[in-house]
Length: 380
Image (spheres, rainbow, N blue to C red):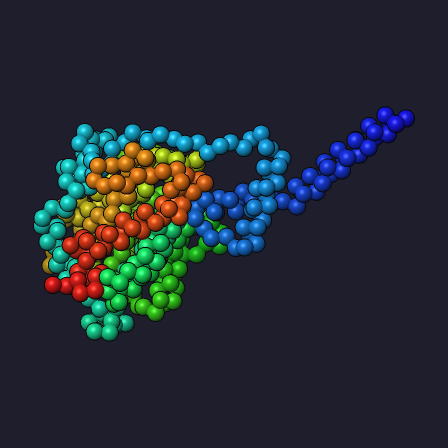
């Protein structure tokens, strides 16, 4: 009798535990949890209620399937040569940021850039030169860009060398890749805002006008480039979107003089198809092609009024952010460690964001076309 009672009690406890698990699971909409997780991966900011809901779903899933939890996989370098180091070519492309093994722009293009830089000056709200005016620098891009540029804004604003005339506004937005900016919104995402409208709101919040925007940092990518096709197909598609974005930037901001372009950081630790290697690496060729086309006189990228209608700001490389994981690169000591990336291996962690922010800050303080407008007393 005692033995039967023990078995009965045991069965009851098992059933109670099972019913509790079912009740808990019933309280979770797994489709909603999946959508929230995907939004977070793409860099969107979740509300406190959404974060709490997602965390509860994750904890419940972990309790249900503890055997599926795996340690973080540490991947070796992907074996690609940074453009700054490359001598042997890659899929028909040669080395150097500007091609031909060169990491500096051709002399004629550099001189043109220096002329544009000299025209950058404090402007009033109507775009007229003013001692009390402002020089506005914006960012344009996706989730990685806003995460990295936000860190740059904090560093730059705390730097005493920065000119007080320079106002920095982060216009980049989570989930808004090159296609989203080019088509002025994401028709496949219900309720998403037009990224240009969000940028307008942020400029208004910073109390600056379109006419005061004179510099842009543009760092773009495509969501799931592998679904578009292997190189060069995905890069060529993105290049088309980038031309549209640059045209729209110049149309909206008539005094935009220079756009500094950067490609993606290392993605060898990526755990999804969002933007893994080698696609992150290959996005650098988009930047190079755009600048080369402008140098060759492509009408859609013209910045010089005497030649033809102005369609684009002058284009230059900003900081090049790719290094082969912990193997690094030759031009400096940049490396990308697993801890520099978030849980998805695609978005930067706090340390990764700071690395990009420091590279960008060093660039605007030392580059000959940037320091003249960024630094206090930077003009000769």
